[in-house]
Amino acid sequence: MSQSASSKTPFVALNIAIMTVSDSRTEADDKSGNILVKKLQEAGHTLAEKAIVPDNRYKIREVISRWIADENVHAVVTTGGTGLTGRDITPEAVQPLFDKTIDGFGEVFRMLSYELIKTSTVQSRAIAGLANGTPIFCLPGSTGACKDGWDGIIKHQLDVRHMPCNLVEIMPRFKEAE
Image (cartoon, rainbow, N blue to C red):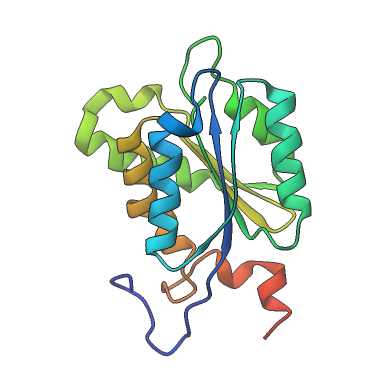
């Protein structure tokens, strides 16, 4: 339970999809994707699906569009493709799908990252947004960045007990169940 979690609210296990954006990763060497799976399971959530998708904006959109249309997928976390090289196109692929951008995610991620890698964090284009009521978090491809993003932000925002607010409490599929 997070430091500011409410013990009166019962935990809600979410189905979370994980996407690794890479032209070179395979299931055998996908350390960042696998650490996210481990982290979400340790938090009590369920892996909805895991995919390794090449650095192709249309293939990225295809998979994420399927996930945000699926009522059984409650959140999406991507890793990779957020840097500044020519093949890094995750933000450009995902942002058109957002109904709303969560500007604070990138700001807080870079603040946390600054403590560890100093000014190198300016090269991170970590973003987040809501699409069809589904939170989507796009993290850098490094295992450290995935740990920091999950531990510092995502695990709290995907925990309905986190106070004073969290993203679960505004998800349409959970508001209707109240």
